[in-house]
Image 1 (spheres, rainbow, N blue to C red):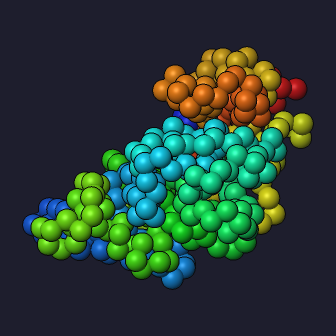
Image 2 (image 1 turned 180 degrees about the vertical axis):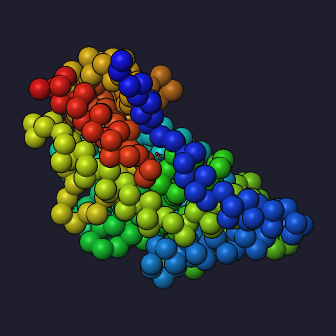
Length: 371
Ligand SMILES: *Cc1c(COP(=O)(O)O)cnc(C)c1O
């Protein structure tokens, strides 16, 4: 008789929840007993602790989700309708939704074939006099070369808004991503490195006037009065999610270390010829996703599925090839690396609690198929 083997899931928060159940339930109870549910003491506490985690002088501002964090950051920087904002075609849809919600026109550049991150030479070639901001995306928990971004931004007078949704805890030259541009934007979507039990997000900035603008925009453009100083939106991180995040934040460094350990196990086990995005020596990646690239993706995926092993593709279609963004006018073949790699990338299960035995199983199947 063969021993039944449990599924290996792409992501699973349940074990983490069980480990923190008492603390989290106590935090939830405290919020409900307090009589304060929106813009209260838990949000203030979380904002301070999150800024401390990022270990740079500045302020964190909690918002409703990561997409809003990006939109509000662009609006706080006075990006206006008709302005262009440059980012990459190999990203999650929300990077581009956010640029559109700010009223701006997304300029899409290709990615570097080795890192799958923004190709900065291609970005530079696409910048026009109407380009106001650049959104480097620290995809998969890797990090874009922020010195090169800063130099380009200075040369072209661009604001820098970092999309750190997948890179909470990643460092570049020893500094946390999100502290290196004008504003760093984070998502606390449940699967992210710091996950809420619902939606959440945050902006981080070292510039007090930007922090104030972001605080105002997230709450209808008001300060503490019923007078709108500017046009805003409603995008608040509520007290319940803030209280939950504040508890989980205490373990975030451990969660990130655990992701690095899982990535290390894969690296030890996967055959040397299997292609993975390069992580530069300057980067200590947080491995939000563990990605490989293969021409035989479909075959590998169906075999993983047959073995009850989860996997996913981030992302199967580059932004410019999606129906919603056809109006941007990028033809097929216009961003060739993004298009080619979209057909090859595959994300393997990777989360802090994933046991080494599961990594063994996944790696064995991958090695067998791609031998
Ligand atoms: C998750 C994600 C976002 C958006 O975050 P939400 O909280 O879901 O709005 C933005 N950019 C990237 C790269 C993401 O992965």
